[in-house]
Image (cartoon, rainbow, N blue to C red; front, side, top):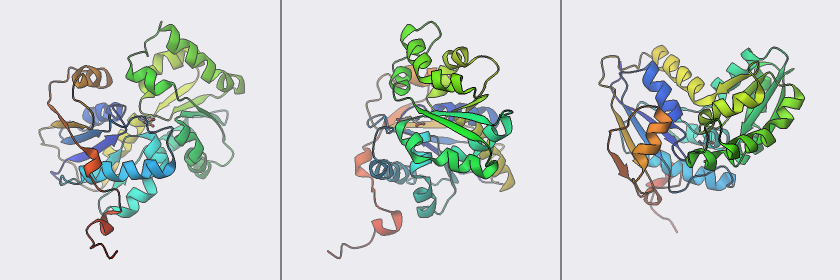
Length: 284
Ligand code: DGL
């Protein structure tokens, strides 16, 4: 048994789709969530900038005594996870491995589609991980940079002509290629499930990376005997931009009324060097 909270972070509020599922699966766990709302989106940035931001996000979360960190961001998981794992002495889990496993299991025709941010697509992380499951699976990829701003602006509901037009254009190559499984490789995308599902058709399995990651976290904590079954299940939210409007947007992602307080954090004040080096004297 481990009473410490789980730290979860994302470039913005998309990671709340993973928190929602964590809450459902592990109602006793306390969760500390950080959303880097002041610097979202990460997806168009260089790998160096993503690693820099991710280290600061983790440095903030590590001011709490955590049992594990969940990288509820496709972009950071595909681009900076190995760095974060190497530099931390608690488990750091990302979204790629569970989603790749789920996709390999779901496909019947061996054609899997992956949509995500530019950084996620550029990384090749899913192709490598899916090939380890089954090297015969073909992975077709498409960067969808307009999806995150659409979601963050509330433009994700069926009938929204902008969302439907953008989705139709991005997803046309996937439909033509006949993929039977589509990985929604960004934690913002589950809000577009209905729009994407209508475009792809009911026979295509959609993989929600936040939800598959949450299921893997539950499994791992159980295997480590590190659950907090009798816990209160509290959530604490931190963001790097103004807290105004947080509750409304967070309620959309969590699909419940958000009453909890949210605190603004000056994320630039946290170190972006590897933690082992952060406290060393400047030898100039
Ligand atoms: N939730 C992030 C991801 O999963 C959002 C994308 C971004 O910051 O560009 O990739």
